[in-house]
Image (cartoon, rainbow, N blue to C red; front, side):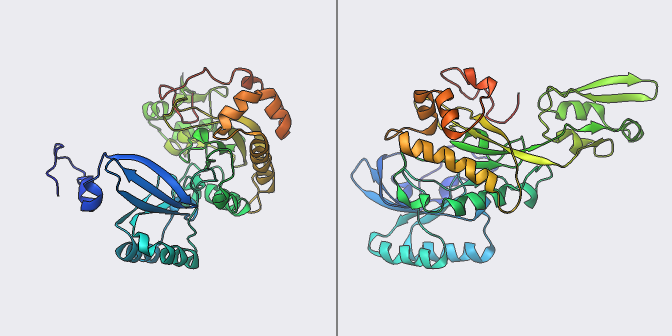
Length: 357
């Protein structure tokens, strides 16, 4: 293996996980093409190529030990290596061409269909939500599964104007990436956290930690004869529940919640740069496990773009071409005041892609 050219660090050298055949072509890739749904051919500068097969995973990319062992056994027989994608799918890299047809059959029989590449719906991404997060307002994985089941055929059709990425975040912190997706589903609490004055003062809470923990600066302090009290600015609060986690003894939150649906986000760094999505349906019921209200609105957005989008035109570019007013009318959304000037022509990471001020 090549000698390390980076200083030693705490984390293992990532190159030790890469097979020699793949490492030898590091930095030499010049092109890739979609041969069929889920099958990608990567071409290097010297004309050599490798095949990658991308498969769909359960919501949040959660895998059991038995599934990981199964994937490892397939890699030994059919591929060079494997990787979980940033959208929580899985790719088998360096699949042997002579075994491709056999391998695709194995994947389909086991319930891991190849797809989610090119001009299709890609893996629906979501946060962990209630699985092991204390901030969740809605159950993101179950919403992601409902969306993936409803639009299952779109993973394989490759007839959309451009790639379609849908992400689900269970709370305003947006770890699921809804604010930077073509279509984002964002869980929100209905109420602002409330301070129970007597319990708050009795709990001897670390005020400095509480104030610093709020991402929007919505918490202010007030000195009283009995001690220092926290006040929450309702206009600045985004209901992320960070304060509840720091001071559960003195701050409570009503658990009633809903989702907002946003469109036009983009996390990549192409010609347009990364962009934040804009909310078009600000208050949609999230009733497990059917989620009909969410599916109906998402379907309307996809159908409009599918019918009228130009080849290669991502959802954000389509909306800007036809105008926000016409788009909102076509999908049956009420006009939202702040969409008049959604954003400047270019956004970058100086504006945080999380759902915060």
